Every structure is written in structure tokens, then in C-alpha cells.
Length: 209
Image (tube, rainbow, N blue to C red; front, side):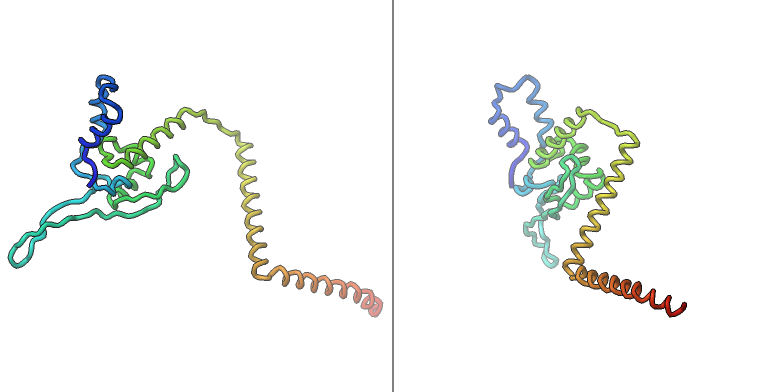
């Protein structure tokens, strides 16, 4: 079991210094820091969306005897694509968090839409702040639009690259399978047949005449 919300607040105040905080900043920090009861240690390294270890009793059927037990969340390791980072993120998530991510439309949208006080893991807070900073930098960039002629030229170049890639793959497959040597032999045989046909053509014309 890892941190509680109050312990996390004490840790932040200890590192920053309560005297160095501006007036009113402490209250705003309390709103941002999750006020969750108990968070698992491994939840620091994933997105759990409020699903954590639960405690209860196991009741026997015969005598109704109770013994303590725990329920752990269903945690899966997934590769989620981030459009802001333009790469896959390998992260441990619960099945509930996966449904939330699908409903939001992706990992970036889930991190942007979920408020800070509901991000009850340190990893979620870290990725949320990082994605928000990247989107803020993207919003400051200038947008450039291409003319229809440039777009058509780009599309044609893309098609040419695709065709060249296909031909290179086909040649590589033929070299691996030895088809290139067979093709050369077939082409040489066709050339020889054409030469023999051309040499025999005048003799047939002379015979016909």
C-alpha cells in the first residue's frame, strides 16, 4: 500500500516549503492532489481509473465463519498510441480504465478530460501534465495550408514511393527464392527462339516464292 492524499500533500509541502508558497496556492494544490483513501504501490506505475484493492470477508457456507480476504483489480499491460507523442506508450491499465479510454476516444483525450483530483496515481498526474504541456505548445504553432497543386504533387510522390517499395520487395523475394536466375534463363531462351525464328524466316520466304 502506498500513499494517501494527505501524505502526498505533506510530501509536496516538505519538498517545496510551506513558507515559499504564495497565498491561496495551498488550497488550489489540495484541489489538484487526489484525496483518495488507499492506493496500491503498483498503481503508481499505471492508470487504474479509481480501481484499487478492496477488502472484505470470505463467508463459509456451513457455519458462516468469516475470514478476511482481498479483491484485486484486473490489470493488463497494453500498448496505447498517443497522437501527441506520435508513438506507443506501454502502460499497465485496468479493464475499467481501458473502457474509459475507449469512451474518451484515446489515451490523449482521456488524460485531457479527466480532472486532476480524479487522477489518483502519480503516473496519471505525470502523463496528464506532460500531454497538456505538449498540446499547449502545439496550439501556439502556426498552421500552414498547401495549395491543391502542391497536395496533388505530394500525393503523386507518395504513390511513386509506394510503387518503388513494392518493386524492391518483389525483387528481394525473387532473389531469396532464386526466381531471378530462372527469369534470366527464360528470357535468354525467348531471345534464342526469336533469333532462330528470324533466321528461318528468309528461308521460308524463298521456299514459298
